[in-house]
Image (cartoon, rainbow, N blue to C red; front, side):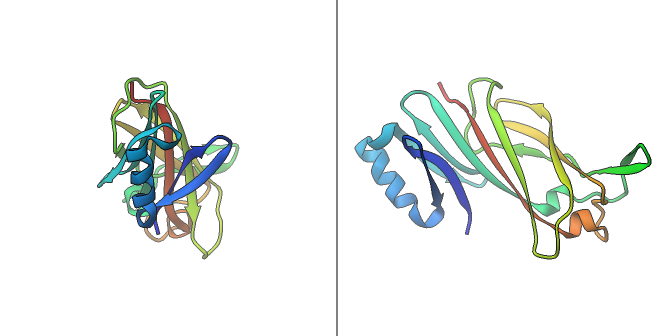
Length: 159
């Protein structure tokens, strides 16, 4: 089940999924909690608030980060591998690039590895992100094998 988190009530985070977007739509129609619009498209979910806040949530499959050849940098004898750097399109455009992004690599049950996300470039409608790890992101390497998906939440302004 795909989930997003948004600020539904003051000091309360409520998970939203495709199964309960109807309740969110009811809140939109009734103007509850300042939500004025919400929705989803092929790029993810978004929630717009009366005060201009925009929250977007995206789930990126691990295949977006697969490298065909090893790309790494040696730092003090340790190889740090870089994933592919996909451009992730947002479900709704922001008015500027002063938004914040929380990027959470989700590891599968096969084990955990050090996976560090980084943002390359920010645009109004997308961002280019990359993962770094001590394990490779080629199809037979553990960094890629143990990666489940990457969850991204972006908070900024729509107006």
